[in-house]
Length: 588
Image 1 (cartoon, rainbow, N blue to C red):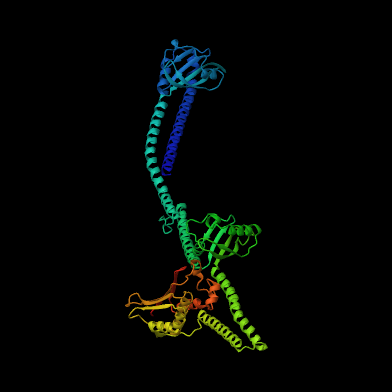
Image 2 (cartoon, rainbow, N blue to C red; image 1 turned 180 degrees about the horizontal axis):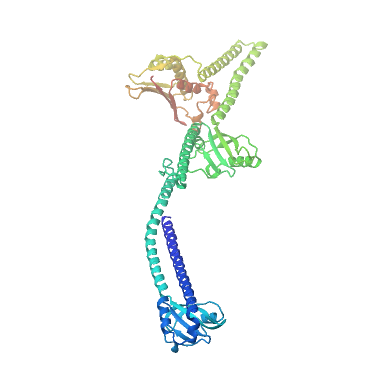
């Protein structure tokens, strides 16, 4: 731009100098010619009036003509009516050709003032001719012609053109200096404005233009500075809002996905990526089916976009594990338009909820079944005894024993249900007592000794010397151990073995842990049943479970007691080789 301005300024100045020089030369030339012409007209008129008629009729004119020439410094020619030269002050008239065809002479013979400019072959120079008629008795008898050379004009014009050329050269120098200075003065602030605007466009909103002045460039610089300041405030506000929005979206438990009307992803938060197990990047702009490969979801969204009716649905996702997700949808549209521009999808993981609902349903069914079985036996045998049809006292005693056993079974079931309910709802009293773990284990094994002896099961106890004590409710710890050892005895065949171990974990200088193991060599548990082992009323082998007895709530109670102790429980089992329960409890 600087180069363009420089050349434009130089060209304008040069054109101005050249045009002014040419016009000046033309004006000077015209003025000089007019001046010579007027002088010749006056002089020719004087010559005609003074000696014109006499010069035509007399031959004694030499001295007189020479005096006139010296006075006027012009060439004087007297021509008769036939065009013959009678007198000429520059050349012998007898040797001159006839002038009847000269334009100035022709005009003079017609009674007008004759004018002409041409090259004189006689004198070999450019001359201006003025001719006037000579009258005698009212008739034109000839013409007087005065001429002056134009070489003076040419000399003056040549000097003028030289001066114009010098002025052009000087104008080039001056125009170059002025053009360069003007170009620099104009482009310097424009360059600064351009540089600053590019920095602002790249995000440097703190950059400002340091240009003072109230001209157009100064006003433009102030406008750009104001724009940058407002852009900076707007960008900072948007960044702050985006940061807060991202923080909110990231902390939201539910997943959020925004798609346009073509099902392309506009936004997806971390919770949605986690729920859908999405690990890729650059998901924005991709079709939702590329991100979530689930035809049920794709059909669901297509139905909404087609019918423009929004409803909720549940979709099961199988990758990598089965999840039940609840999808809520809402339209994205401008307030003044009815067209839907996209959809906001909210995802909620209801896997645990559905699992709890299933467990509750199963629990109700199992409780109903478990309560119904002993009640049916009690009711049936009681009605039999009430009818009095049994005369044998041994049968009566057997029936009463059955009624008692079923009542005990019913009592244990209700007691376990109440215990489990209290543990789940944390309604048990918080007891913080020091528990001697080794002593508690020995008490439990003593309580179950008779049960193990009936099946000739060997119970081995291995307790680390100096075992740490626990803090908590000793009755809960005892109940937990009873359930684990009792299960080990029940599901271990006769002549089997049960091993109970307890030893310290961790550094005693810090918070330690105690590991309690209950291991048997019984029937074992298939791997597919282990994840549901601690559910209420869940039985691996229902037929065998009813044979060995039990309510199906023992392991559920164990799990909740471990949770109350802030511990964790692990299970390892192999069918036909046995099962091992490991319980890790913090000492404090």
